[in-house]
Image (tube, rainbow, N blue to C red):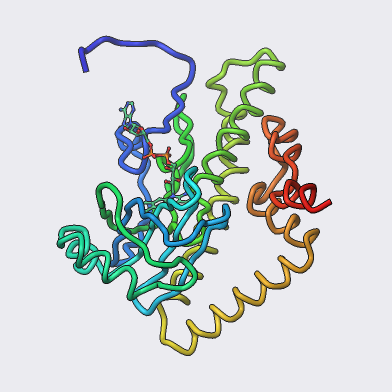
Length: 274
Ligand SMILES: Cc1cc2nc3c(=O)[nH]c(=O)nc-3n(C[C@H](O)[C@H](O)[C@H](O)COP(=O)(O)OP(=O)(O)OC[C@H]3O[C@@H](n4cnc5c(N)ncnc54)[C@H](O)[C@@H]3O)c2cc1C
């Protein structure tokens, strides 16, 4: 902003969906506008969330409540037609609370708003190239996906892991960090995974915004998968690993995830019962 110039071997661009660096490099994007918006807010639940994220598939779009550190606070992400999201973000708090409780009562108990509401349009966007001359895109500068499956941040973490691996290898070989061939390797790995994530979530978003029978069938399928995964913990672990790791090799950065050493959530309860 002050006109100062900084010289570097490589610019890692994590400046989000509107990245000016991507635009300056002349990299265009493929777009899809979902013609709806995400209404977000912090909500007090009528019952403890138990560290479980829940999603309800409503006719207007999915409503997700994601656990926050307080046992009965959750982050609301509610996909709605854009005008309805705007109206619910601006209306009186009592009207908002009534609409929220009418939309999704079970199993959250009586809910009410805490703090501010916001809304933003939902879109999918993927950069036609993930690299440029001495430039590597990470996160939403490279890909924006529908939040329905909660995979945006995972994709971003995998970008960072793959880039760290690429740059570690670049240094090991004594090459320049901006080496085009090494960056190509990063782009090849990450674009395939991001495209798979974008198409997968796009397909889910289309099904869940489709006609009622298709939506009901898909919701029943999701409940079935959830039931099977909860019944067979090893299968649940396999699903979790797939969501964490995506396509391609797992970065050395995450190979020994601290999460792997955490006891299962019910371990403390099991101990208490003995
Ligand atoms: C409603 C909604 C719900 C979501 N829910 C989930 C979820 O449950 N799980 C999940 O995994 N993902 C979710 N996502 C996606 C997730 O938010 C993104 O994947 C994540 O934020 C990664 O984005 P980012 O860091 O690339 O970009 P951003 O979060 O946009 O961060 C970019 C940062 O760069 C800064 N910046 C911009 N320009 C410059 C500049 N020139 N110089 C310096 N800094 C700059 C910006 O101020 C900003 O802080 C959701 C997204 C939405 C919209």
